[in-house]
Image: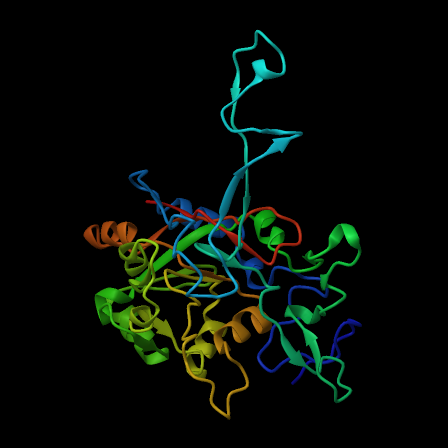
Length: 345
């Protein structure tokens, strides 16, 4: 713990954190490094104009076996009075009109499928006040209950809101810049591989990939391919044996993430890291990579992207870089967001 702050939200920040480095009220973290120059770097990678959508269908993976809290989207028509607006003839209301109207709504777990995690997604119990008592807090010292809160009142029943660190901050910023693909499948295959610093450096070397500050790191593991093949009926035990995952317990990997200057990590798997690891008595975090990236650095994570067509094209053309455009929904107060990322090459 170091670096006492003049900010009343915190008197000390976690070891290795960058709280306050981008200002006392910062809500973007490392995304601050994604500026005009990074957009221009990404634009310079556009040679052919080919476009790849990097999203899975948002009704995948299917069911709620991967995460029992999250369910597939449910679509329904909007309604007014007794009328459901699906194939609804306006002549029913105004004889003589020929319009037929369909209008719908959705109930959606925002992190069910291809998604961004906002900085409000994972916080920690940490003694930010320096008084010997740990508080529930998030990146840059923002607090539970005051900044990330459940709303009270009859009209807000069951509602919650990130007053700070919501995903809309990323949406306004734009999330556009240079993406760099590391195709872990070509190095480690489709089986479950724990990727720490040494394994990542091996992949960068074998694939001849260079990562620079301001880049968005994009990891293909093959997990999304398995999700597609399972066609809405995910086999959880098989998925636990599928695809590379980052080793969030590897201190050297975490230090590389800090030192590299990358602004985001985007993967085609669930959780980016080894979320299936059993919790050991010495563990302080269930999700140590999330703890390091979201809580300490303000570095957003993206999950369950579909990268294979892009990866195949880049491999064929001996490339790894592309223009990545991936804004989340501008949904104020949301903690996560579905995303349809676009890669332009």
